[in-house]
Image 1 (cartoon, rainbow, N blue to C red):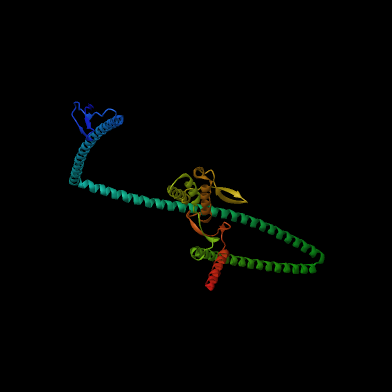
Image 2: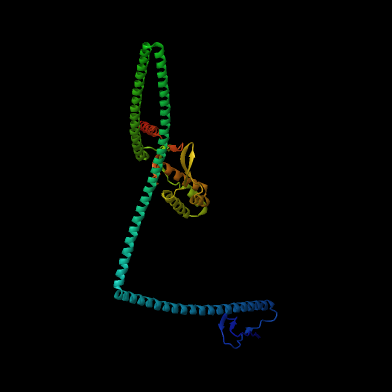
Length: 401
């Protein structure tokens, strides 16, 4: 009449829909036997038993997994408590040692602290003194470089003056020879006329000589007048140059505030262009780091350009004049071209050439009126024309308003 299901752990009583955990020994489940002839009920009972078996297996697996995880959680909590306690003891020990060291240091080493501070002040004073000596040395190097350039210029001027004096001496020698020849010819002519005409010849010759002397005196006076006029013109030219330089300096100071035309403006001669370095750094570095790298490299080469001890030039004669050009075999320039390319190389070379032309004695950046459209130094007339044009535009704009 009843079917029995044995299990070591679980027992399920279907009639009541109830399950409980039993002892290790066998547990009996009793089901009423279905009446014969009811096959559907038997099939349903078998399906229920199969489902209960699967549910029992899953429940056992989950229970074991929960037990394992609870055990691991307990182990982790225990290790955490031990680690926290150990860390607390270590922090307390560190604080105790730090306090003991501080107390001992203050107790036993006050004189050592004073000596260290005194030595630090001494080193700081020495550093400031060394920096001052370095600046003085750089100033002396600039002065020596300026004196060397001045000496070379004076030497060139002396050579030119010597050549001019030699040329003048040759011309005077030719004139003297010519005058001597004319005098000899006149004396010969005089003797000839004297032999031919006697007294009348002497009288006529004296008249000719007097006329020649008068003409010569007039030419000498004209020569003196021309020399005086030449000196006056030289003085006026010098004064005009001084006035022009003052005018250029004043325009350099005020032009950025009154002129917004891009054709004429103020250019910083000897300044290294940053754009070639920015282009290279933009390709090599990512993010915002490329801007910092570009500024670092352009500033580094600007300092090298300003260094009077670096002279990457060589002299050559062109059109009969001694000129300084860039020495392309200079080690720093070759390294610059190899690492940063042709554009950066040209930027540094242009800065060197500009300083060598506009400020060779100081080797620092100077301002100059510049025609950006034609890439040359701007004339005062061009700058004044631009200012006048700007004023006319402003007046026209005011009238329209």
